Image 1 (cartoon, rainbow, N blue to C red):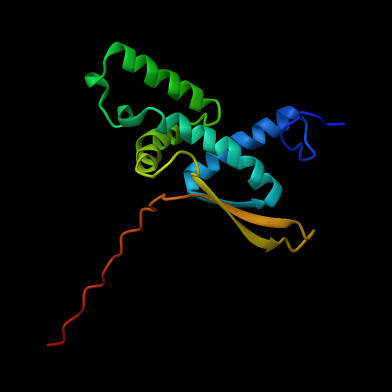
Image 2: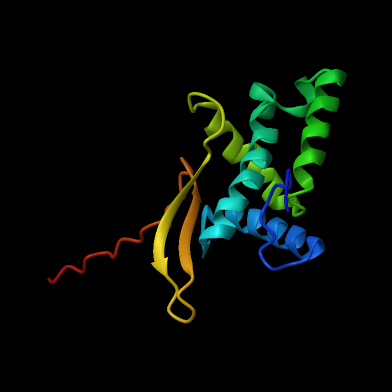
Length: 154
């Protein structure tokens, strides 16, 4: 019996599961959305929510420059960076989490609810239920559109 045992095993041992969640959280922060199986997406949601909460719980300290912070505030920011780094080991993605994603999430009403899961049908090979998980409110940077100069005929 699995009384009081939380989380899905997903057919993996604990170290493989932990590595998979770290990779998936990093990919989700990098790309904004990923497609995976429905049970993985449902389980991933809690890890992503907790990681984003480490950034949003700092409030306005996230956007302030380091030289304007007091020593206590710097220690608090460092602690939050280190706790989020458990799930996002890449420095570039960690900076993106704190500098881009967290300030956008501060403007959302309420707490939590940073992700959305959309069912995407079944996978062709094994008929596994698929889902797209995305971070709500991420503004994708559009690629610059190059306008072709019109040639004038003389």
